[in-house]
Image 1: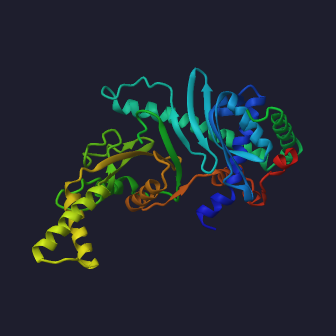
Image 2: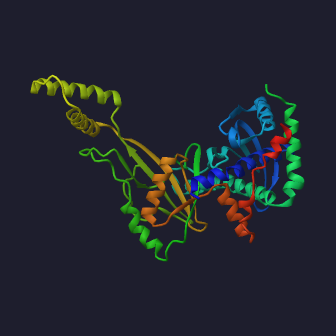
Length: 178
Length: 209
């Protein structure tokens, strides 16, 4: 199996991760305790794209934040899953925003906290400060994804997590499209 | 896309295999060999790619080992392209064809002749075109083997991977959900083969539809 086939065949992992992350964020006040990485807040805000799996693939819904996210909740009840989401991450006093995609878990449009170093006075200092600020959200996404994978391959997924996720999705049906 | 100003977009890779023992010595020679070189004004080359200093995209060539920023090896992938706008090419081709017809007293030009004229005009205009320049930063964590690259475009990522391989003789493996999950289970001493048994949990959606 080549890379593109492998990515396509396992893309559901990324979609389920983003959908699960949204569910956990909404049901847990946005808080995640990630052990060594620390406690963070993760919020789904702004633009979100959902897409159906299987034969209906390509049937997309794009919602743009605020009350429009109700449409995204409704789309979940129609079997669609999150393929791209705008995320706000808060760790301590620092805040990042970025878009996270399901096929690759790439971060795009990442806005980091303001840097303190000056490029003219200390270029290397700027390099290390920016790399630190870029690697932080990547470490958080890795830790969140690791938590998802551990759950996904465990019995707990079928017995506890999936029913809870299903309940949350069903509650979204009442929100209906705008 | 730069890592050091504005918003950042990045793709993640893991370097396949370990760098050789004399890696640090060899890269001091190999990176300058694959450094960016400007498009020559007397050529009709359309694209030039190569490495530049991650903190100065306009620095052509390297003065020392400024790419080592422990624990990273950091470089920028610079791509310069130039092209002739299609409408301008058509205009100049028509004028050139009329000139040939008048000079050689011909009523029509055959396809081969028109193609020769077109290629000559394109080559002449290309030398006058101003290149568009873009840089995409790369930071390779030499301890973890993870490479962050500042683009998600397939073409740019493919060209970057090729230059990376040519320069360092090491392949890059894309990090995507399955690969990340595989690595995680392996690190935790579990069988990553369980991933191949997973099926999409579409039942959650169907049950609620």
